[in-house]
Length: 162
Image (cartoon, rainbow, N blue to C red; front, side, top):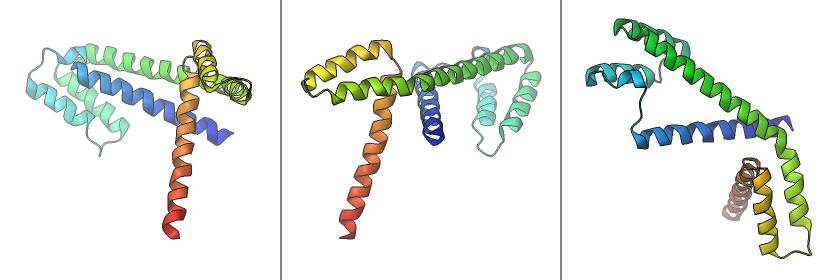
């Protein structure tokens, strides 16, 4: 069960972060304090943030130093605080979703086990349930697809061996 919760937490965290990054790239958003800087100044900022060879602490230290050199300490600190608050909020939201997953799964399982309903009726019931479990139902189906993919991969692997 702990592995399951951990897997869900990681999957949600990655999905949410990727979605956030994806939206920002399309909108051309960048931190507010970068907007009035030269392209060279922006480049030096992103060289630090995108450097995979630096630890998180090293990046933080270099970015603080960068902000000090550019006289942007206050703006950078505000940005850093907002980022930390955003990550904390995401973590809280993930925990809330995880705490409701088992309950949502039981309800989905009950709907799927009801053989008196048609597939369309089951889909409608799940759609209605999504109103109550806005994030949990899609998460359950996402997890299900992970296992479905795993099952298919094992099946294909067995076919190749024969």
